[in-house]
Length: 150
Image 1 (cartoon, rainbow, N blue to C red):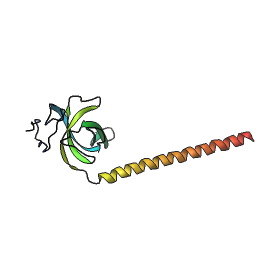
Image 2: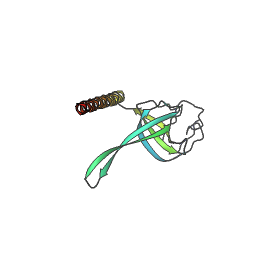
Image 3: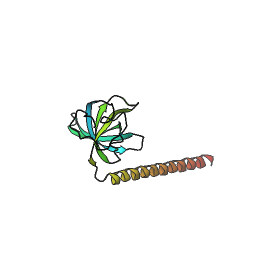
Image 4: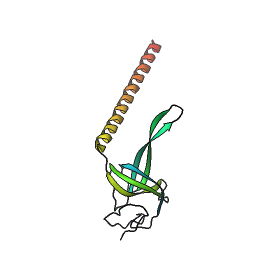
């Protein structure tokens, strides 16, 4: 029988032996909670969760979109994958950078794979432009050396 975490969250159906699981272990949860998307779940029992917020800049009377990214413990019974929308809540420090634990999988983000692919393509394009610019700069340096030697 999984224990209650003190929130209106349905306990996972699977059972795990993780001592840092809020349902089957002894981890106590408290404080802040957020809803976000799992960006990476490649680490052992850890997921990187990201969410956006809109902040008003009073001086310019405009709004700005900000992103927050944290690492959260991913228990075996929940096992969130990349692209899942999850609810996380703060807990005691589990490692140097891990202060949150995933308590619920809410659903799946639409078009997550396409967005990740587009971000990767943008990185590749940026690197190609950078190498082109470096080659142009080298060509300019060589032409200046030739003019100076004449």
